[in-house]
Length: 444
Image (cartoon, rainbow, N blue to C red):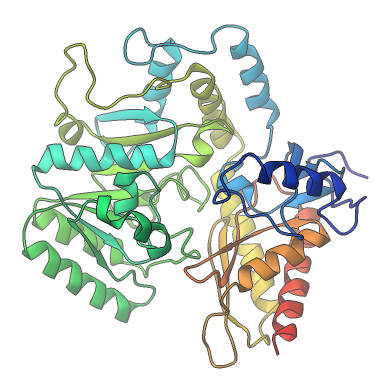
C-alpha cells in the first residue's frame, strides 16, 4: 500500500460512517446548534488526519479527498513545506497585533501579494475568512464611489455575514434575515451561454443606468452554485459597462483564485482587469486567511489611520497564517500547481464526459481546472433535486469524498488537491461514474 497521502481508499469499518463517527455525531448533536452540521445515519464521518489527497477518519477509514476541504487544500493536506513552516513559526511568534504592532510577516505577505496582483501599485487588507474579505470589498466600493447600490448575480454565494449575505443570492440563506440585509442590492442573471450573456448584460446596463450603483460583484466561475462558467467575453463586457458608469468591478476569487482554475487570477484568462479581488480558501495553506486586493487609487479611498482603523480585527495579519501563506505561494510557483490543475482538470472532465456520454441523467459536465461540476437531470431535463447529496453519500461508502452543489443540490462538485496522483484520479473518476449511474438508475 502506498504511503498515506498518495494512497487509495482503505475502508476498515464498512460502510462508513463507522461506530466512532456515529458516536461523535451523537455527542455533537448535544452541544452544537442543530443548524450547523448535517447529521444522519449515513453522514458525516469525523476526520482525524489528512495528508496529500488522503483523509483518515476516527474509525481508521482512508478516503481520497475530491473536495479539497472546500477548496482549501489545493496544495494537498499538510504539504511538507507548509507544515515545516507552521512548526517553525509556532516556535517564534503565534500572535501579534496586526494593526498596532504588526508581525513582520504581515508585511512580507502583503509585499508578496502585490507581486502577484494585476495593478501597478496594490494595496490590500488581510482578514480571516472569505466573508470578511467581501465585507472589505463592499466597504471599499462605497468609500471610493460614494454609492451604496450593488449589482450581484443570481446563484451567487459570497458569504453569510450580513454584508456578504446581502450579495448572496440563495433565498434559503437570505430569507430568515431579509429585514436586516442591505436593500440596495439587485440581482442580474448569471449567464452560461452567449444568448444568456446578452440578456444578463442588458439587465446590468439597465440597473446601472438607474444610478446609485457603486459596485458590481461577480464570481468569475460560480462555485457553490454548481461550477457555472460564463461564456468567453462576458466578463470583459461586464467590466466595460461597469466602468462606463463609474462603478467598481469586484471579482470574488475566494474559491477560484490562486491556481485552482489553471490561472493564478481569473483576469489572466480574458485580460479583464477588476478593481478589487477577494481571495481566501487556499491562500492560508490550511490556516484561516483571506484578503481583499485592489489598486492604490481605489484602496486609497480609505482614510489614513489616525490610531483607529475603520475596518480591522484582532487576528489581522496573524503570523501563523501569514507564514503558511508565504509557504503556499512558494509551493504554488515552484511546483507549478496552476498548470497541473489545468492538466488534471482536462483529463478528469474528458474521462467523465466519455464515460457518462450515454447517461441521459447527466445534463452537463463542466470544469475550469480542478473545479468541476456534474449536473444531474431527470428524463424531462429537470434538475434532480438533492441528487448531488445522494451521490456524495454513495461515494463516501466507496472511499471518495465529494460535495453536492447547485441551487437545488443537483450538481456533484469536485475540487481535488493538485497533488492527487494518477491512481487516485483513476479511482475517483471510476467511483463517480459508478455512483452516478447507480443513483440515476435507482430513480428510474
